[in-house]
Each structure stands twice: as C-alpha cells, then as structure tokens.
Figure 1: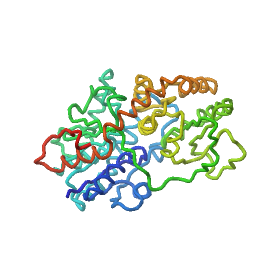
Figure 2 (figure 1 turned 45 degrees about the horizontal axis):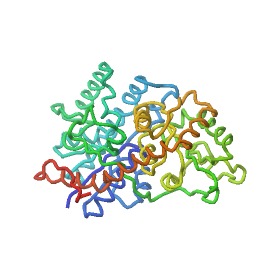
Figure 3 (figure 1 turned 180 degrees about the vertical axis):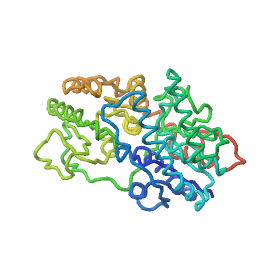
Figure 4 (figure 1 turned 120 degrees about the vertical axis):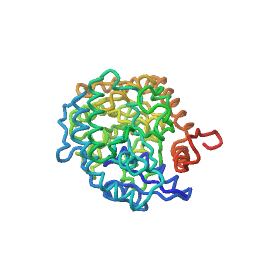
Length: 404
C-alpha cells in the first residue's frame, strides 16, 4: 500500500474535492494525510484523518484583505503577491515537516498551494496537481504575455526561496499528473498549461461529515427553489448583490423561494417571518442542490461543478480571478446565463431566473454536463490515477472502462 499527502490551502472550495479522493484511497487500504490548517481540515475530514499543521494566511485576513472593487489583472496581481506567494512561504516549513514525518509516495498539491509542488520537487517525491479550477487550461493568459511573464518571474523567485533553484517544473502543473475536477464538456479542450498530463476526472462529490443544520420544513414543495451563494471568499464584495437577490426573491415569490448563503446572516433566523427568502451563514449545499431548480452564484468552480453535477442550471455573476473564465464555460455549454455582478438589479436577476427556469434548454444542457461528470468517474478514477503514479514501474496510464 502507498502513502498520499494532500497539501491544501485554507479555502474550503479547494479542500472539498480532495475529501472524496482521500476517502477512496483510504477505503482501498492506503495511508492518507493532509497538510494545511487543522482548524479547517479536521471538521471537513470528520476528525478521522491525520493532519499535519501548516501555518497559512487566509484570504480576507491580515495583509490579504482585498479591496472589494478590485478586478482584472489587478485582482490577479493581488492574489499572487498578497496571498498565494505569502501562503506558499508560510506553508513551506510545515510541508517540509509533513513530508519528512509521513514519507509520502505521492504528494497531491492543490494548484494554488505551490509550496506542495516545490517541496516535493526538491525532495524528489513524485507529485500530482489537484486542479480545482480549469481556467488556466484554456490559455487564459495567452492574450496577456506581459502578465504571463510577470507570473513566471514571480514563481521563479519563489522557487529560489523555498524550492530547488535548479528545478524547471511549473509548480501549478505537475510534470507527472494533473487531476482536473471537470470535463471537456464544460471546460473545453485544454489549450493552455498542463498539456497531456491533464486527466479530466469530473467533480469529486462526496458526503461531508459536518453539514450545518437546515430547517427543511421551511421549503415549500409547490414552488421552485433557488440557491444563492457567493462562496467563502467573497463576503467583502457581496452585500449589494445579495440585497438585489433578496429583492428578486420577493418579487418572484409567487413561483419560487430563495435560499441565500450570507455570512452576515444570523445562524438562527425566525423562519416564520419570511416564507419567501431564507438567509443563513452556512447551508448543507449538496443536499440542497438535490432539490434545487436554479443556482445564482459567482461562477466559483466548485459551486458551478456541484450545481451541474446535480443537473441544475445557473445564473452566474463572476467577480474576479478565474470566475469570468468559468462563467464563460457555463454560458458556452448552454447551462446558464451571465449577469454583471457589480450592476445586476433585482429586475435583471428576475429576468435571468425566468430564462433558466422557463426555457428547458438550460436544464437540458446542465443535465448533459452532469452526464459527462458522472461518466468521468470522479474520486474513484482520480484515486486510480494516483495509485499508478505511486508505482514508478507503472508509467503513464489511461483509465479503462473496466477501471471506472
């Protein structure tokens, strides 16, 4: 049996896809551990997995507080200079200790936790990339050569500080294996970085051990259900948009009900006070998606893929980072419509919801993407790729139908 160490950032959306893969590997008899923030990882893993602590800043804390109106290249520059590079430097010592103590056969490093790849490369450990967004596969920086060159220079300097200066691998894309938690049905054919190392395994959707409570009797089965979420890293920018969503929910209350994930909401609302719009700081997203009819979101990759896994069409309002690219994927697939995050009004949101709920083509496209996700195999197929990577004699391997 082999040992697998998952190195993950303090971002729930990046951790969630690894949970199902780790559980699958453990069920096959392998040893599995995580390196990251224990206070975040232990509840998500149910307290049953080994967690090696790594110091790490959180996006939205300390020096990583982003101005809410920052967009485009400025947002990318902030993300790398103020969050991802400092995160790598803070996580590197803990990752070193985890590798030394756990002695993994394979390190599985999140695409944005570049300390994992750099430490593994320097210590001669085979490593895979866990890609929780497909934006960079599409050559998103091809039209911005100066930005691309700036980022390459930033990563080269980082390698000189925490990695092997002689190394050549891009720490965002393992030279051995890149696990993409999507499919070409949504992401399109890969034209950017990663090349033939990319394996489209589809979303890794697994039951979560610590789901928050939810007043299920609040739901009215006579009306359609819309879930609104801006993810875990956008609370600073979301107040105006969520207010417009609330207004849209009330205007459309004759035909739908709205559940809003709002970090500013109270955890124990008086649900009888508003039968049309329910706002909670946390919700059990996967169980809710099983009965949802539409999702309004920021086009975060994790939320988009979980919605489409359930065949639910989307209204996407990208804010920054990879979200415009993912939003374009949703629209190109015919599985949703796009609105402008900074300018969307309640009337526009009502119209967008009427479109995706009233025109069956959107549900049909979402179901086609869902079928491709399920056919790709998810966590079991990802686990099989990792097993073959752990065996140096196995070489490259394509999953057969019998192995799915």
